Length: 101
Image (cartoon, rainbow, N blue to C red):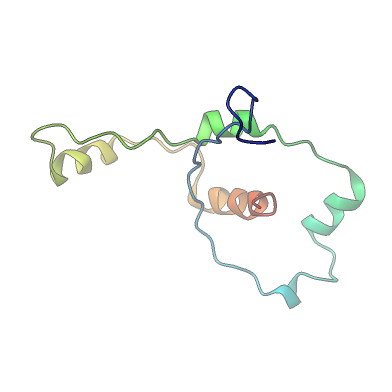
């Protein structure tokens, strides 16, 4: 029975960053040849969820330190390094959305 003490239970998953994208109307995708329909026919892809959670997982909310205000968080945001450009990131988000359940 899940949830019993000492029973192993289900491991709690880390929260992952959200991807922001515009949805494509279903009638423009369904029944047409595109990346998603070809990928399903060609191969079965295995997604390494653990690696994705390690790379994109968010840390639990920490309590704000004394004297930390809106300005300090703004300075931290300036030092953020992006690996993917916005268009590539958006495309990755569209791809990963099919695995969200």
